[in-house]
Each structure stands twice: as structure tokens, then as C-alpha cells.
Image 1 (cartoon, rainbow, N blue to C red):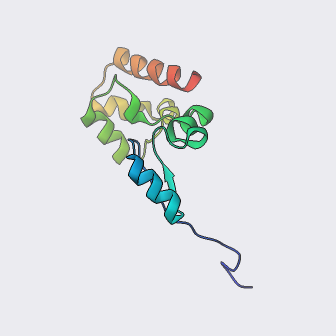
Image 2 (cartoon, helix red, strand yellow; image 1 turned 45 degrees about the horizontal axis):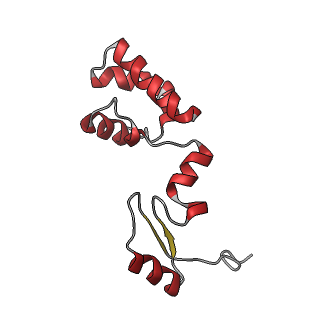
Length: 112
């Protein structure tokens, strides 16, 4: 059995910001997969997040940058992982009320 025989690879760049028009055009010309926050319209990062509901914890405003970094280092990447990781929120030093606020904000993002 040969592994990888029918696999095709394609280079690409994905960013949560935006590309210049020149970068988008270069990507098209070079055959690169180019995905940014709002490009291409039907498969942009924003569109993919909205379709799947897989919002990153970095989109939460109820957590500080330091708190988000701690969670990321512990493997909590997505908002839908917070319910299963409430102990980590306690470990950060959040109160029960703050935890409820974070969980509620995450739930609102997921439900949209």
C-alpha cells in the first residue's frame, strides 16, 4: 500500500486580519489558498466561524489578555470548551459571578 499517492497538497495563508488587494491577487495568481477575515466572501474566516459556531476564546471581552493566554496554554481554544473547564476559570482567580458572565458571553456567541 502506498501512502500519500492520491493526496494533493496546496500552500496557503490564513489570517484573522485582512490582506491587501495585491496580496489577494498574488495568492490567486500563485494558486495559494488565501483566507482572511472577510475574504473570500463565501469561505472567509468570519463566514466559517459563523457557520460552525466555533468561536475562539480570544473573541471574548469578559476575559483579559492574560486570562485568555492562560486558557490557550491549557488547551482551551474555543468558547464551547469553557463549560467543561470551569475549574481553570477558578484557577485564574475569577469569582463565581465572573465565571457566569464569561460562560454567558461565550454562550451568546455560540448561539448567534
